[in-house]
Length: 391
Image 1 (cartoon, rainbow, N blue to C red):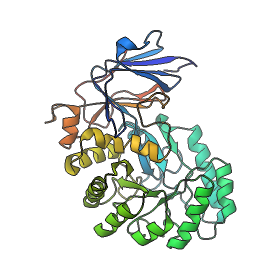
Image 2: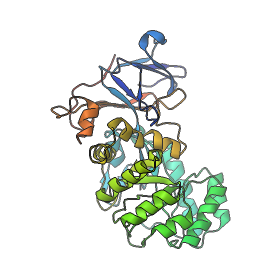
Image 3: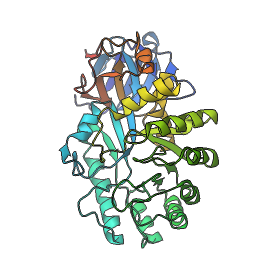
Image 4: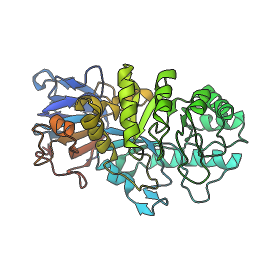
């Protein structure tokens, strides 16, 4: 439903509010008010101004969660991936509760340029294209160049001046040595670009092994797929990375599940769960995963001994804070990006959180992006016990 400036969204009768924040993952609230696509207030209905709403959603007692964030995707253009010859993968992911995606490089573009000018041009083009064409409403932060050895500092300044904010996965191009990677990371940081580095064995032709020593020397902001994409580093190197740096610990669906759980437990032992963020690392050789983030939340909770409400933080507030996004948390001023979740029908869990703790995928009843309804009942998740309704 289109909303004019100053129009109000009211979400009422919420059964539970997941905040996205590890320090207080469940909020004492049953109503959220948003104005112009941003959260304006939350709390109990009796204490809030819910009059004159342009759109009212009756949550019917289901859980309100921040829209999920996929920290690691490889888009190309629009909702098409040549990697698997598929279309509608982004829209399908939105039906899995994902409202924001972060590109780790447009690496699958056929004929991807590898010369300096081509790399810069592609980064700016991808950033521009996705910023004005949000597929299914999903906010895709794209334009993440795959760095090559002949790039110079001026290239990073040019990209930053044009609005590029990310580096693609270091190691997918010709830059693989620690000292070379550090030079690129330092230039990126100087001009405000966040960096992610590949870890583990090669994922595509042209990529290569990036081990713990290279990651530590490079000093990137995010340890990309610490559980491998697909092939993982040895567990002692995963522990080394968790212990010897402060970078984001990114766990992905298209990786080694045993290593994923080991990385999670290591972060927990260190008292640093706030560093854990989630991605799918798709499209890739494994295809695309519309429910990949929900599956990761369920697996890490069920097998990693993490309360479900905390596992949802890995896919929301942790990523938002690590990547300086304006979404991912239910708090005033943040983007009104919501996913309405409930227990899947016939789950052995009696509540949403118990179902997820048992390893079941949460059911999506509605997705809201920037205060607008992006979808109703998901076409991909198992059917929910209850679904929200537009009043």
